Image 1 (cartoon, rainbow, N blue to C red):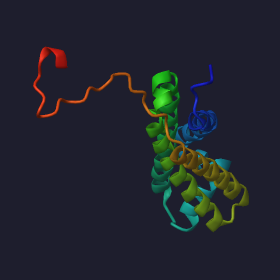
Image 2 (tube, rainbow, N blue to C red):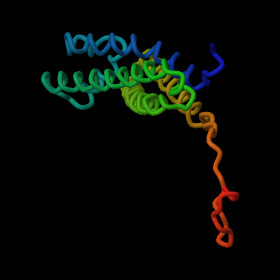
Image 3 (tube, rainbow, N blue to C red):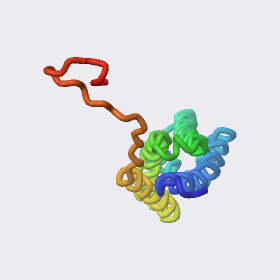
Length: 174
């Protein structure tokens, strides 16, 4: 059953198992109550950076919170697409789900890196550890995807060589 699974596919599925529930919960908390959701533990560094360093007003903070929630939901959506594509053996063998995984890894890495920098700037050590761990998970999966290549497609049709210019196309030459 697991003979046609690649390491990148398993790694992507395990990452999706973490990021889909964790980031969906954070994004929905921000969507329900933007300011309250922004000041919860996973996004408190972003909230402190926005209020302290960028001195954003109330509505601007709400817009930034919604933008963060939209980015997180985008990553969740691409991880879900990756999981859906893994259900088909032909797609899984050929690496067809790697594009969705790559987009999720790129956007997720960007969000985690920016959040890590903001946590470092405001001095939130717990948030810094969380975002650094998420960033390392995403970058490790990206390295596995880049290094591991899908299997080459098997050739089933036999190609016949064309006739030379000197040979006539007769019945016995076919």
